[in-house]
Amino acid sequence: MSVIETKNLSRIYQDGDSLIHAVDKVDLNIEAGEFTAIIGPSGSGKTTLLNLIGGLDNPSEGVVSVDGKEIHGLRDNELINFRLQHIGFVFQAYNLIPVLSAQENVEFIMLLQGQDAKLREARAKELLAAVGLEKQMHKRPSELSGGQQQRVAVARALASKPSFVLADEPTANLDSKSTEDLLDIMHRLNKEEGITFLFSTHDQRVIDRADRLIYVEDGKIKSDTRS
Image 1: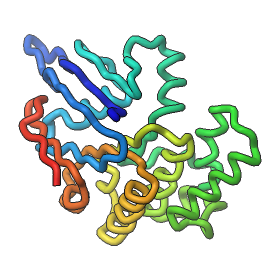
Image 2: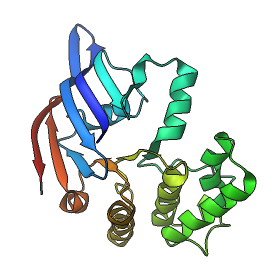
Image 3: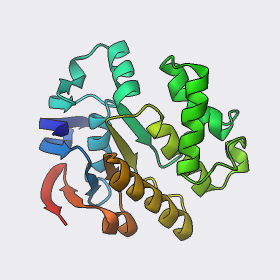
């Protein structure tokens, strides 16, 4: 079953008198349970493609469907709510709320969803334990290492039980040990719980773990291979 489908997806930017085709007529299907990496040189369109799929940017033309629903036809408030319910995000910069503890950061998405406080607390503790941070759940981001902060970000991305997780260069700011630990966690969640992950990455360690590699250059898919 497709959780993500794009048809003729394009994003065109104006640069002076020139048009930049950051994403150029991309047709793509991502099935439930995939562990897929979008790869390619800098400026190839990887992050733009991820942002379009996540509803963080609007296409110049074409369609993005998530769980069979075209997301760019939604009104702004509908799109925000749809992202909240269906898509988990892990960013290179962690994007944690500095004044909140690890547990509160994970609970925040569920708070926005209007979930009960006891359910939020139980889910947050379960997820932080799953990423190996049960002893750090009351610490704020400034008290955590980069690798620990990114693990909180993964737990937060999973809090809403999304259809899939988009991870944009999630290991870029991490050392080798933190990267391996994070990838172990995400790979285990993928294999044991069937969580769908779609990465944008330059990191060979992520590439080596992926079950499917989509190579993008000049905004186009040049190859699509499965291991």
